[in-house]
Image 1: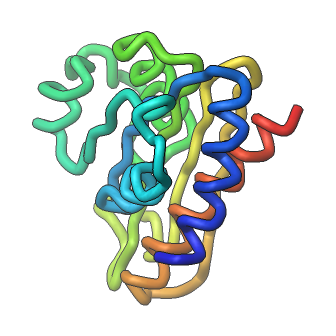
Image 2: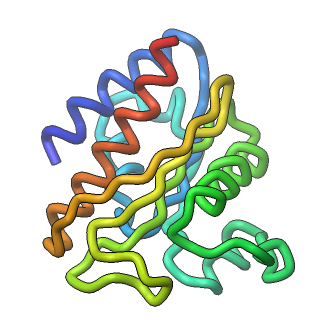
Length: 160
């Protein structure tokens, strides 16, 4: 967790300097992204909210994304990650939305993705979506790798 917080500190410094805000939707990281951002003193200046969107019900209730909006989309995909990031940004009226969706392990998901698969998206002044494949079935290590990748992707966008 200390390594995640060190990346989150860099993110926080840039968000604070720009007076920008963020909201986070995460799935297989289980709140690690939000916890890392909130571990930085002064988080209330930039962190507006977050949600662990782990199930279809959570997607419907927390994200207000109905089943109709999912036609042609599936969880653990880049288009879905982008949708989550945009939805967080819009619903929370933040400068940035960050999302993660994947399969931490030890097995893959019902969509055919192997353990270690994660799609991560940033929505904001510069949008980006990426897919990470760790090749590992170590749930704990994957959760950390997914969270670190998400924070570093956001940091990259904030450095521009």
